[in-house]
Image (cartoon, rainbow, N blue to C red; front, top):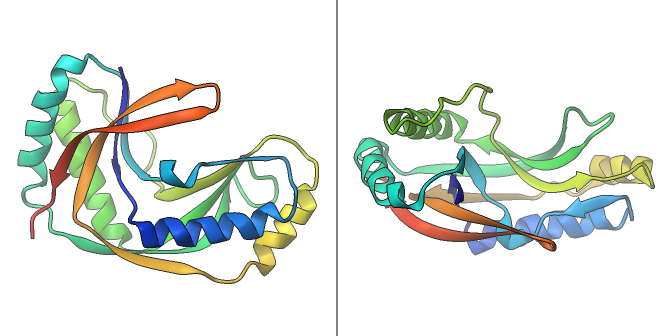
Amino acid sequence: MRTFIAVPLPPDSQAMLATLQENLRSSKADVRWTSIQSIHLTLKFLGEIDQAIVPRMAEELRAAVASERRFQLRLRGLGGFPNLSSPRVIWCAVQDGKENLLSLQQTVDAACVRLAQAPEERGFKPHLTLGRVTGKTNLQRLLECIKICPVLESTFTVDHINIYKSVLLPRGAVYNVLENIELSR
């Protein structure tokens, strides 16, 4: 079963991201846009795991995040990977709350390592994937849209994380919540 651990987004943040996407879609660039309901902040991608370990993993994560306090995140700004000159991924940035998010990600990673999952080797770069560039058509228009896009932002409280099951379908991935893990008040 393909799984990951992530921070879900509230409806207000999803609405802000939908507006950003709509502004960028006007470029008519070759981009496969991410479904708004699928956008999340990944803390740990687990890949294929046995479904039988999910309850134990949830228990380990609950114990690990018991010391992690709820915190505010502010989403604001656009970027691209590897860069905005020739992006393959268009994303929305995490502006405020990165330190808390990094602490939470490290706590989650350590808990997963205790359950024999490989530690995260890449540096944590918090972002929300809005779309993946699939070709060069209208790429310059897309980059211009990013430059002139109105500055939108959304702030929300991170009060829980989820363990998700990812099902890959021809129309895109579908994510189902397996476990909900609350952060400390």
